[in-house]
Length: 156
Image (tube, rainbow, N blue to C red; front, top):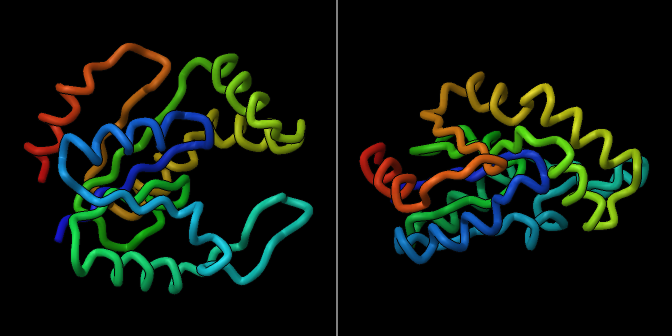
């Protein structure tokens, strides 16, 4: 089975794109948001997030990929050891990203943390460190979803 990681800073459009790709590629979407409690070691109140246990994450993805090709939708999916392709979504327009995060009612601290993660391209750099095959999509710019689907199919 094939596994495509769809990652990026919160607010870059991962879930929107993943839902589109789910239909076009006939892959099953695994939205990790629904599993954070299950794959975490606990909730960090100061950071307002779950501390993810990477072994539990790997096991969840392995179990779910037994039956289906998977699109793993999460800002941490690039941390997986084995993926066939890693789509890294970015948003070069930081004002647009800030607006999206504020619409989600993120705290000022959380907005700043996520903008910093985007500025320093944390998801992209970590995906590169893991030597994933990477496709970068800047969601602040116009891009053809159809062309992206072709590129994904060619990469797999």
